[in-house]
Image (cartoon, rainbow over all chains, first blue to last red; front, side, top):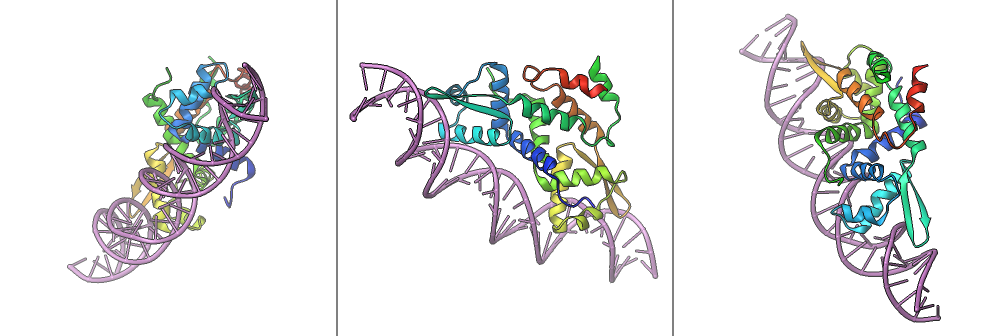
Length: 109
Length: 109
DNA sequence: CGCTCATATCGTAATTTTACGATATTGGCG
DNA sequence: CGCCAATATCGTAAAATTACGATATGAGCG
Protein backbone atom coordinates (compact mmCIF):
# COMPACT_ATOMS: atom_id res chain seq x y z
CA UNK A 1 0.00 0.00 0.00
CA UNK A 2 1.57 3.24 -0.98
CA UNK A 3 -1.13 5.14 0.86
CA UNK A 4 -0.18 8.64 1.94
CA UNK A 5 3.18 10.25 2.22
CA UNK A 6 5.06 10.24 5.49
CA UNK A 7 6.35 13.44 7.03
CA UNK A 8 9.75 13.22 5.41
CA UNK A 9 8.17 12.73 2.03
CA UNK A 10 5.87 15.65 2.64
CA UNK A 11 8.78 17.83 3.61
CA UNK A 12 10.64 16.74 0.52
CA UNK A 13 7.64 17.41 -1.69
CA UNK A 14 7.28 20.87 -0.21
CA UNK A 15 10.92 21.66 -0.89
CA UNK A 16 10.61 20.42 -4.44
CA UNK A 17 7.49 22.45 -4.97
CA UNK A 18 9.22 25.57 -3.68
CA UNK A 19 12.16 24.98 -6.00
CA UNK A 20 9.93 24.16 -8.93
CA UNK A 21 9.10 27.80 -9.46
CA UNK A 22 11.64 29.39 -11.84
CA UNK A 23 11.71 32.66 -9.90
CA UNK A 24 12.42 30.91 -6.64
CA UNK A 25 15.00 28.70 -8.31
CA UNK A 26 16.65 31.85 -9.56
CA UNK A 27 16.64 33.36 -6.08
CA UNK A 28 18.44 30.26 -4.82
CA UNK A 29 21.04 30.56 -7.55
CA UNK A 30 21.51 34.20 -6.75
CA UNK A 31 21.94 33.57 -3.06
CA UNK A 32 24.44 30.85 -3.89
CA UNK A 33 26.51 32.98 -6.21
CA UNK A 34 26.66 35.83 -3.73
CA UNK A 35 28.17 34.09 -0.76
CA UNK A 36 26.99 36.92 1.40
CA UNK A 37 23.37 37.23 2.29
CA UNK A 38 21.35 39.63 0.21
CA UNK A 39 17.89 40.97 0.63
CA UNK A 40 16.79 44.13 -1.13
CA UNK A 41 19.28 43.34 -3.87
CA UNK A 42 17.19 40.37 -4.87
CA UNK A 43 14.33 42.69 -5.61
CA UNK A 44 16.49 44.70 -7.95
CA UNK A 45 17.71 41.62 -9.80
CA UNK A 46 14.22 40.37 -10.49
CA UNK A 47 11.53 42.05 -12.58
CA UNK A 48 9.03 41.75 -9.77
CA UNK A 49 7.53 43.98 -7.14
CA UNK A 50 9.02 44.00 -3.68
CA UNK A 51 5.96 42.43 -2.14
CA UNK A 52 6.07 39.57 -4.62
CA UNK A 53 9.71 38.85 -3.93
CA UNK A 54 9.01 38.96 -0.23
CA UNK A 55 6.34 36.34 -0.73
CA UNK A 56 8.70 34.06 -2.65
CA UNK A 57 11.28 34.45 0.08
CA UNK A 58 8.66 33.41 2.57
CA UNK A 59 7.90 30.25 0.62
CA UNK A 60 11.57 29.36 0.45
CA UNK A 61 12.00 30.10 4.14
CA UNK A 62 9.02 27.98 5.15
CA UNK A 63 10.33 25.16 3.01
CA UNK A 64 13.57 25.27 4.98
CA UNK A 65 15.72 26.25 2.02
CA UNK A 66 16.80 29.69 3.11
CA UNK A 67 17.18 31.45 6.39
CA UNK A 68 16.41 35.07 7.16
CA UNK A 69 17.89 37.09 9.95
CA UNK A 70 16.91 40.61 10.84
CA UNK A 71 19.99 42.72 10.74
CA UNK A 72 19.34 46.22 11.86
CA UNK A 73 16.90 47.88 9.51
CA UNK A 74 17.00 45.14 6.90
CA UNK A 75 16.64 41.39 6.68
CA UNK A 76 19.53 39.24 5.62
CA UNK A 77 18.81 36.05 3.70
CA UNK A 78 21.15 33.20 3.05
CA UNK A 79 20.90 29.58 2.02
CA UNK A 80 19.93 27.16 4.75
CA UNK A 81 22.78 24.76 4.24
CA UNK A 82 21.32 22.31 6.70
CA UNK A 83 18.04 22.09 4.86
CA UNK A 84 19.73 21.94 1.49
CA UNK A 85 22.00 19.19 2.68
CA UNK A 86 19.00 17.26 3.89
CA UNK A 87 17.39 17.69 0.49
CA UNK A 88 20.49 16.48 -1.29
CA UNK A 89 20.73 13.44 0.95
CA UNK A 90 17.08 12.63 0.43
CA UNK A 91 17.35 12.88 -3.33
CA UNK A 92 20.58 10.95 -3.32
CA UNK A 93 19.03 8.01 -1.57
CA UNK A 94 15.68 8.36 -3.29
CA UNK A 95 14.21 5.56 -5.36
CA UNK A 96 17.15 3.29 -4.69
CA UNK A 97 15.60 0.55 -6.75
CA UNK A 98 15.35 2.73 -9.81
CA UNK A 99 18.81 3.53 -10.98
CA UNK A 100 21.94 1.53 -10.76
CA UNK A 101 24.45 2.65 -8.18
CA UNK A 102 26.91 3.57 -10.87
CA UNK A 103 26.17 7.23 -10.58
CA UNK A 104 27.06 7.39 -6.92
CA UNK A 105 30.38 5.84 -7.72
CA UNK A 106 30.98 8.17 -10.60
CA UNK A 107 30.39 11.07 -8.28
CA UNK A 108 33.44 10.07 -6.28
CA UNK A 109 36.02 10.64 -8.93
CA UNK B 1 24.54 38.35 -13.34
CA UNK B 2 22.14 35.69 -12.39
CA UNK B 3 19.88 36.69 -15.29
CA UNK B 4 17.75 33.89 -16.64
CA UNK B 5 18.06 30.19 -16.20
CA UNK B 6 19.93 28.11 -18.73
CA UNK B 7 18.33 25.08 -20.34
CA UNK B 8 19.67 22.65 -17.76
CA UNK B 9 18.33 24.78 -14.98
CA UNK B 10 14.99 25.01 -16.71
CA UNK B 11 14.85 21.28 -17.13
CA UNK B 12 15.72 20.82 -13.50
CA UNK B 13 13.09 23.32 -12.39
CA UNK B 14 10.50 21.50 -14.47
CA UNK B 15 11.36 18.18 -12.91
CA UNK B 16 11.20 19.67 -9.44
CA UNK B 17 7.87 21.25 -10.19
CA UNK B 18 6.49 17.96 -11.42
CA UNK B 19 7.70 16.22 -8.29
CA UNK B 20 6.44 19.00 -6.03
CA UNK B 21 2.88 17.79 -6.39
CA UNK B 22 2.09 15.23 -3.68
CA UNK B 23 -0.02 13.10 -6.00
CA UNK B 24 2.73 12.91 -8.59
CA UNK B 25 5.30 12.25 -5.89
CA UNK B 26 3.11 9.39 -4.73
CA UNK B 27 2.89 8.03 -8.26
CA UNK B 28 6.67 7.99 -8.43
CA UNK B 29 6.89 6.13 -5.15
CA UNK B 30 4.32 3.65 -6.36
CA UNK B 31 6.14 3.03 -9.62
CA UNK B 32 9.34 2.57 -7.66
CA UNK B 33 7.90 0.08 -5.21
CA UNK B 34 6.34 -1.99 -7.97
CA UNK B 35 9.37 -2.73 -10.03
CA UNK B 36 7.10 -3.67 -12.85
CA UNK B 37 5.33 -1.03 -14.82
CA UNK B 38 1.76 -0.32 -13.86
CA UNK B 39 -0.88 1.73 -15.48
CA UNK B 40 -4.52 1.30 -14.66
CA UNK B 41 -3.46 0.11 -11.21
CA UNK B 42 -2.30 3.60 -10.40
CA UNK B 43 -5.81 4.84 -10.91
CA UNK B 44 -7.12 2.35 -8.38
CA UNK B 45 -4.53 3.30 -5.81
CA UNK B 46 -5.36 6.98 -5.95
CA UNK B 47 -8.67 8.65 -5.04
CA UNK B 48 -8.80 10.42 -8.37
CA UNK B 49 -10.59 10.05 -11.65
CA UNK B 50 -8.88 8.23 -14.48
CA UNK B 51 -8.59 11.36 -16.56
CA UNK B 52 -6.89 13.20 -13.73
CA UNK B 53 -4.35 10.47 -13.21
CA UNK B 54 -3.70 10.38 -16.92
CA UNK B 55 -2.94 14.08 -16.80
CA UNK B 56 -0.49 13.66 -13.92
CA UNK B 57 1.22 10.88 -15.82
CA UNK B 58 1.56 13.19 -18.76
CA UNK B 59 3.25 15.84 -16.62
CA UNK B 60 5.69 13.29 -15.25
CA UNK B 61 6.36 11.94 -18.72
CA UNK B 62 6.99 15.37 -20.19
CA UNK B 63 9.32 16.17 -17.33
CA UNK B 64 11.36 13.10 -18.25
CA UNK B 65 10.70 11.29 -15.00
CA UNK B 66 8.70 8.37 -16.30
CA UNK B 67 8.38 6.57 -19.56
CA UNK B 68 5.25 5.14 -21.11
CA UNK B 69 5.09 2.38 -23.64
CA UNK B 70 1.98 1.16 -25.34
CA UNK B 71 1.69 -2.54 -24.70
CA UNK B 72 -1.18 -4.06 -26.50
CA UNK B 73 -4.42 -2.58 -25.26
CA UNK B 74 -2.88 -0.73 -22.32
CA UNK B 75 -0.02 1.62 -21.62
CA UNK B 76 2.84 0.55 -19.44
CA UNK B 77 4.58 3.16 -17.32
CA UNK B 78 7.87 2.90 -15.56
CA UNK B 79 10.45 5.20 -14.06
CA UNK B 80 12.78 6.86 -16.52
CA UNK B 81 15.98 5.87 -14.80
CA UNK B 82 18.02 7.98 -17.15
CA UNK B 83 16.10 11.12 -16.33
CA UNK B 84 16.04 10.36 -12.63
CA UNK B 85 19.75 9.75 -12.65
CA UNK B 86 20.27 13.07 -14.34
CA UNK B 87 18.14 14.73 -11.68
CA UNK B 88 20.13 13.10 -8.90
CA UNK B 89 23.41 14.15 -10.44
CA UNK B 90 22.19 17.71 -10.88
CA UNK B 91 21.00 17.98 -7.31
CA UNK B 92 24.16 16.33 -6.05
CA UNK B 93 26.36 18.91 -7.67
CA UNK B 94 23.97 21.76 -7.07
CA UNK B 95 24.96 24.82 -5.11
CA UNK B 96 28.45 23.46 -4.50
CA UNK B 97 29.39 26.54 -2.53
CA UNK B 98 26.56 26.05 -0.09
CA UNK B 99 27.19 22.88 1.81
CA UNK B 100 30.38 21.21 2.74
CA UNK B 101 31.32 18.16 0.72
CA UNK B 102 31.01 15.92 3.76
CA UNK B 103 27.71 14.55 2.66
CA UNK B 104 29.01 13.21 -0.61
CA UNK B 105 31.68 11.34 1.23
CA UNK B 106 29.25 9.99 3.75
CA UNK B 107 27.19 8.60 0.92
CA UNK B 108 30.01 6.32 -0.04
CA UNK B 109 30.11 4.23 3.07
C1' DC C 1 -17.46 -5.37 -38.46
C1' DG C 2 -19.27 -4.11 -33.81
C1' DC C 3 -18.03 -4.25 -28.99
C1' DT C 4 -15.32 -3.56 -24.97
C1' DC C 5 -11.34 -2.38 -22.31
C1' DA C 6 -7.67 0.89 -21.36
C1' DT C 7 -6.18 5.52 -22.11
C1' DA C 8 -5.81 10.03 -23.83
C1' DT C 9 -7.78 14.39 -24.73
C1' DC C 10 -11.30 18.09 -24.40
C1' DG C 11 -14.12 21.49 -22.16
C1' DT C 12 -14.91 23.45 -18.01
C1' DA C 13 -15.49 24.39 -12.89
C1' DA C 14 -13.05 24.84 -8.50
C1' DT C 15 -8.85 25.73 -6.26
C1' DT C 16 -4.28 27.45 -5.84
C1' DT C 17 -0.56 30.28 -7.16
C1' DT C 18 1.40 34.43 -8.58
C1' DA C 19 1.68 39.28 -8.77
C1' DC C 20 0.57 43.98 -7.58
C1' DG C 21 -0.44 48.17 -4.92
C1' DA C 22 -1.56 49.79 -0.54
C1' DT C 23 -0.89 49.52 4.10
C1' DA C 24 1.39 47.92 8.49
C1' DT C 25 5.75 47.21 11.07
C1' DT C 26 10.40 47.82 12.74
C1' DG C 27 15.03 49.83 13.37
C1' DG C 28 17.90 53.71 13.15
C1' DC C 29 18.71 58.74 12.71
C1' DG C 30 18.34 63.73 13.52
C1' DC D 1 9.48 62.25 19.01
C1' DG D 2 8.96 62.47 13.83
C1' DC D 3 10.83 60.56 9.69
C1' DC D 4 12.90 57.43 6.35
C1' DA D 5 14.56 53.10 4.69
C1' DA D 6 13.65 48.18 4.36
C1' DT D 7 10.35 44.55 4.78
C1' DA D 8 6.29 42.04 5.76
C1' DT D 9 1.48 41.44 5.34
C1' DC D 10 -3.21 42.29 3.44
C1' DG D 11 -6.70 42.47 -0.07
C1' DT D 12 -7.51 41.36 -4.51
C1' DA D 13 -7.10 40.49 -9.65
C1' DA D 14 -5.08 37.56 -13.12
C1' DA D 15 -3.11 33.33 -14.38
C1' DA D 16 -2.06 28.55 -13.75
C1' DT D 17 -3.06 24.11 -11.77
C1' DT D 18 -6.01 20.47 -10.54
C1' DA D 19 -10.00 17.69 -11.00
C1' DC D 20 -14.05 15.86 -13.21
C1' DG D 21 -17.25 14.03 -16.67
C1' DA D 22 -17.84 13.38 -21.40
C1' DT D 23 -15.95 12.16 -25.52
C1' DA D 24 -12.34 10.44 -28.77
C1' DT D 25 -8.81 6.93 -30.01
C1' DG D 26 -6.78 2.32 -30.57
C1' DA D 27 -6.05 -2.56 -29.72
C1' DG D 28 -7.95 -6.96 -29.42
C1' DC D 29 -11.90 -10.20 -29.53
C1' DG D 30 -16.15 -12.67 -30.99
